[in-house]
Image (cartoon, rainbow over all chains, first blue to last red; front, top):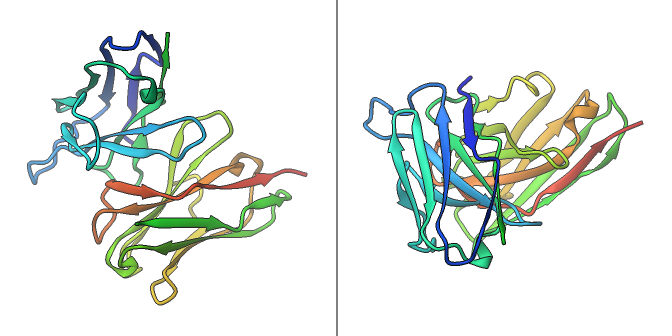
Length: 113
Length: 121
C-alpha cells in the first residue's frame, strides 16, 4: 500500500498569516496518463470532508483562491495564503493512483490563534 | 443540489451484521461511481470500498474484504454497505461519497453526513 505522510500534524495560525502542509507519498503518484493523483480534503469540525484540490494543484469548484497545491512525484504541499477563521479543521491528503486501497495521510489539524 | 442521506447505523454486538444505506438525490446516480469512507472516533479517514457506476466493479480495503459487500440499486438511487462479522475495530462513522467519474477515481466531490456504527458487547 502507498503510505501518505503529512507534516505537521497540527498548526496554529494567526488570521491573515500563511499556512503550509506537506504530504509525502511512499511511491510516485504520477500515472502513465500524465496525471498525478494527489488530492486534498478539508474536514471542518462536525462536518464530512470536502474536496479542496485535485490532481495536485486544481482547485475544486467554489474553493477560494487562497488555497493552492503544488508538488510532483512524491512530495506535495498545500498552502493557504492568508488563513481565515473558516479554514479551521483537519486537512487530509489522499492518493488514488493505486486502488485498492486509496490511502489518506494522518491529517493536519489547523487551529486559529 | 446533490444530497446523500446515510442511514442504517447503530449499536451491534461483535460478530453481528448491519446494512448501511445511502440515498442519493440531485444528480444522475447511475452515472457515477460511489464510495464508502469511515472514520473511527477521534481518528483519521479510511477508505473502505468503491463501486463503479454500473455496479460491475467493486473494490475493498483488506480490513473489510470478505466481510463487507458494497452494492447499489440504480433504480432506487441507493448505495448499500452490507457489513457482517463485525468487529470492535469497525466502530466508526461511515460516510458515503460520490465520485466524479464512472469508475472510482478518488474525486470524492460530495459526501453524506455519515452514519455511526458502534460495535460493542
